Image (cartoon, rainbow over all chains, first blue to last red; front, top):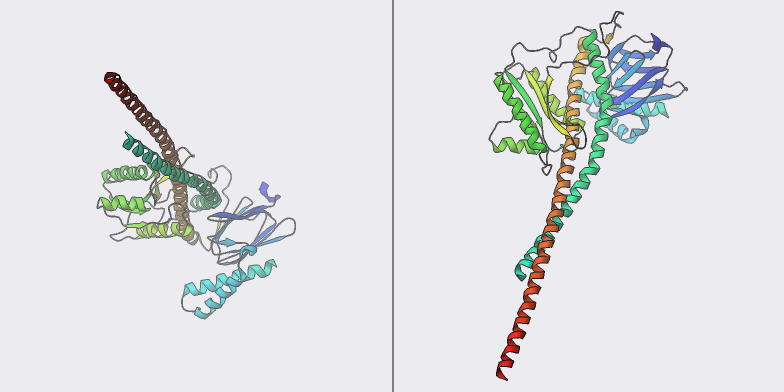
Length: 133
Length: 302
């Protein structure tokens, strides 16, 4: 494939905006089956994501961290699209709100799936902020 | 004469204040329309990537999904009509309702029952006034549709579509106003479900071997989560387009209302001036007549 030598083109999009887009060396995302690392020349892939952190390594050595609430990742021809209902970059996350949410979710956890999801989301947010700083 | 002059002045005054209101509404619509367009534009990448992914699955796997399979003989069709919450937007709501009526007529001719779903207070009022049944309606977000609203609407439509029992529908259509430009908005009817994925990523049947897609956990699971999102994104797109169209229609309507008010003010001012002039002329001629009569009487007595 011609795209093998070129860096990956990554689009991280939420329904109402493009959260991040640019070139990348590597993308690490957590799918329902486990973590997946995507390098250039990756085989076409379409996979579901869980509520977790996505890491994008840019060609200049930087790392972009973002948190996604579910969604999926699609890889084809050197393009990586990460689509999620809610995607946030660390500087958009309100850490205190996430911590409060985490506490609240811990208290009700086990009640239902929704509580568990809330817990996972809050954790993912805090982890994203910690990774970025 | 003096009474009608006062009347005309009052009319000019009220037309002027009306003009102020319509001018303000025009400006508000004009400033909001830019925001609405930006929202529509920023939603485009998601829709594009989603379409790409959906067509990839549709092209590179042969999975049948309830949302894409064509029912054998459709008997019930759902129509979602996207109207506005507020009026004063010219023919915006009525033209989209007209389009919806046309579609409903066509569906009935094909022997399908029509179940109506409404977005926007205007459409709701239209159907309520005529005593026609509406399955569900949503209001309150026509000029700034949120993703949550689109989610709610798509959930209702999908569950009606998937439902195999009596209340279920076999087709889902959406009637909304497409925003072509500031001047042109056209009511459009599209069939949403069953999905037809027409936009292929690239012509899939080239000589070269197809890229082998990996689906994780499985093609079915991916489709299960992908297709509802696709429907949601299509509905969100329709809502955003409708919002931009509504604002454009309102701006246009308010602009012509302002122009009309200006015309009226001009006309009334002319009439009022005429009436004032007539009054003065009459007063002068009365005075002159009186003076003449006096002079004649004095001349006669001398």
